[in-house]
Image (cartoon, rainbow, N blue to C red; front, side):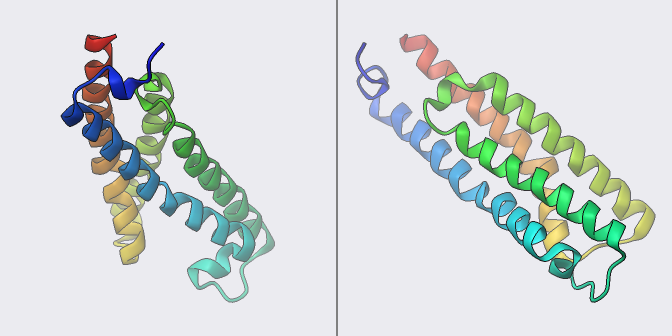
Amino acid sequence: MPSLAYQISPADFRQRRLLQATIAVLAMLPVFAGLCGVVMGPGFLGEKTPPTDLSSHVRFLSGVFLAFGIAWYSCIPAIETKAERIRLLAILTFSGGLARLYSLYVDGVPSAGHVLGLGMELVVVPCLVVWHGRVAALSQSRG
């Protein structure tokens, strides 16, 4: 079977590559933040002497965040075939964004990095799902 590069137009192939590159760049954020949280615990957020339970919880959630980033990277090869995985990751990410939005309402506006994360979770990730749907449809129409 010929590669996808020979099955779709150059413009469609560029859209696919651009989506792959965008996910590769955006997935750096949860990977970096997850690694920092695992290694530094609440110290990553400026906590000097956090309670042990808070440290444990932050490191656990940071490990989950790291896994999210790695899972997004796993969508890049043959991206047009990864609809189920992308949708699942998007739903989980969006759910976390809703929890972050609730925190904003209850606790107040967090630091700029967390506001950026909120925008990624509630706006950028749903846009990626729509964009992926278009790229996947292009490959199916040629398949």
